[in-house]
Image (cartoon, rainbow, N blue to C red):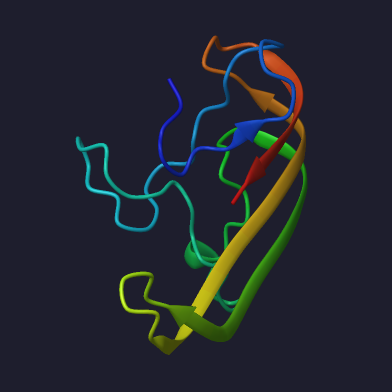
Length: 111
């Protein structure tokens, strides 16, 4: 079962699913809401500086946090209005302990 904020595996069906990191943005213990992800913070705040979304992970993480502005259009009345956006993208490649308790290798993406 894939949960919000859990990484997507590049090759489905090979190995066990990874275990998502505990906590994250909007996470409330015992509920399925929120994301298993932390926004990168200053290097001195290690609790907020976890780039991986996988627990028990040993590998590399590429991360891009893109912010910008643009124009949106209301499809009902065709009025244009300014908008802002933010996109968090992460790619993880390496070894991890899966939900089956065994070590696996994989490539994952998070958008």
